[in-house]
Length: 508
Image 1: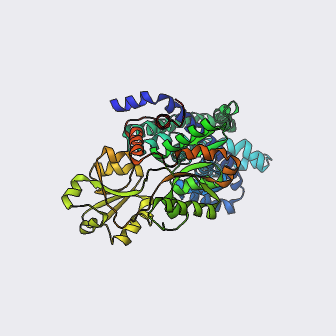
Image 2: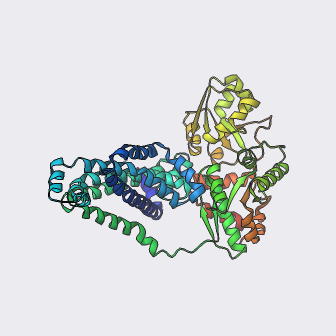
Image 3: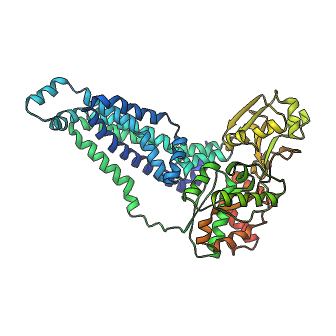
């Protein structure tokens, strides 16, 4: 408990900012869902032959995994709030639509007949009789939708939309830091409870005020969500730098930002923790981000769909740079020195118990050990799929998990081996043993700035600024910087600045 209080005290400013972002995204999505669902539900009560198919479509939307919806929307709307709001609004349609339709349909038929007998038209009967009586049911649907949206909004952090999911992702990336995860999860739950209570009040008053209560709710919600945006004075960035999940990409984009702003007149914005390779690359192609650090081995295997033709770092870089240019019209600047290659790691105790020195040694105990691999590593040819072919392995049990959970799993004894990155901070913290790769399954993974060629053509000055990192940052230096961010809770910006100052690349 003391640890949580300390984390809360240290991150109060960030917490309130994330709460506000979460609230804005959720309310905008709810308003859109309501404006679509209520009129559509009313229309369906007059078009009964299409009512069930339409409601069924909204039900199907809720069955699609939220992350899949977000990934699908990125090529069309980029990253950030827009695709998140669209996805959340789609998830919120069903409860409101179904309750609107049901509420109108369940109005006492005798009242409908009486209204018709008084000469009311269909529209007048709807607005004067049916809608006021159905409002409590409609408001109940809006309440349900609100709770659903607030809970799902946490996943929007994966595409740079912000919100309390940022804190949860940070906690997962820090090896399952319970305090950080709770710092994001508890306010999200409280926010859902508070909004549910507020909407419950509107639901109760709607029985008397009818349609006016819904109009009032939408107006208030719109003012809360959109009002601050009207008075926002954020400066426009010339470049936006993105990064995958993790401390290392966050440190690197902060270095890029500092170097670009030191050497040029450009203003740079940052979008860290955007997710895995495919999602970040899609954002680069679409134009939501302009630059991100990519590893040479990943570019060849995951983006180009090839295998590395060499195990020499310079030749691998040349293959990646040429391939990215030819296939995607991308510019790949000079790589840094450190090689953050994949590795298979285990504890010193387990290695000693079974005499494990290389990946091939796992063959003798493949039925006795449990592996904890990321989804990406488990599916990659330069990952577990390649291990099965090159080393003739078929591990008895493989558990796939988020990258941030691996170190906790091996530390707690839940798994025996994990896929790791050579420069990860937890390698130092947990004193893990890296199994040798004598067959050179894992190609070199040197980080380098990747961007669209049009970006480099528009801002040619960034090439000299970023190439100052070419050949710099050793594996030990990168590992130590990652350790400082992940385990000493230092900010990526501070760690990046200190390195650049020490190297004489920027002034203090």
